[in-house]
Image 1 (cartoon, rainbow, N blue to C red):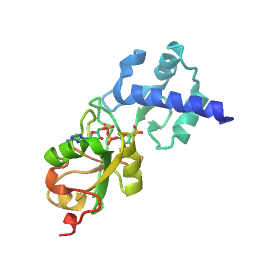
Image 2 (spheres, rainbow, N blue to C red):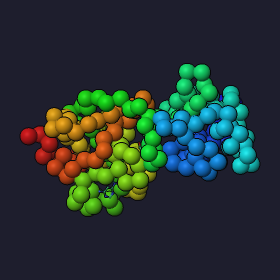
Image 3 (tube, rainbow, N blue to C red):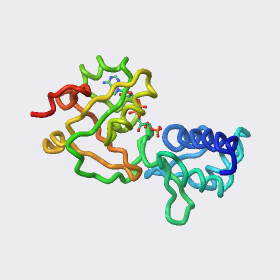
Image 4 (cartoon, helix red, strand yellow):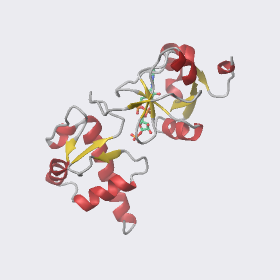
Amino acid sequence: MRNEACRLDYKKISRFISLILRHHPETIGISLDHHGWAKVGELITGINDTGKYHIDMPMLEEIVMNDNKQRYSFNSDKTKIRANQGHSINVDVELQEAIPPEILYHGTGEKSVCSICAEGLQPKSRLYVHLSKDIETAANVGSRHGKPVVFTVASGKMHRKGYRFYLSVNGVWLTKSVPVEFIQLQGKNRLQD
Ligand code: HQG
């Protein structure tokens, strides 16, 4: 990337790509296959046809390679692209089931605490609840929703009770939902038993 203006533009295009590949491919008149793949040619043409951005293959490759959360992957011959996680559309991105660490973290906004304490963590508009392996990342995620609050999740216990966890290729832990008995507001000790 050559300069600051260029970086900002790439960031905006990356956000737009995230919207297309996770939530609304129809925005640019394309569709995703069962595994969440879009055709690279269709994505580039669709984005350019909006008239808002200009993108070509080298730019797309740079966005995929430099994305700060490694949100996207190409297939082996770079004819297809998909988001690694974060979808609201019902696609199967072939997530790897994995044994989670004993504790994971979920960051949210303060305004959601009461509801979460009452009904546990729900995926809301996405396919999975997103969990982070460290508090700092969770706090960053939470800050997208106002004053950040972090919950600890007894992921080890959940796993031993049969709940499934998945690790996306870009390192985000995912599970379908987290019942109240496995969460604790960060800073309290109930998970030690
Ligand atoms: C909250 C970003 C009330 C939940 C991040 C969250 C992440 C509840 C919000 C990824 C609730 C959903 C996902 C309940 C959950 N009552 N609120 N029972 N259960 N919530 O954006 O986890 O930059 O869909 O706490 O880094 O914030 O897009 O999920 O606040 O990995 O790549 O409902 O998005 O990645 O919000 O973020 P979101 P999230 P990207």
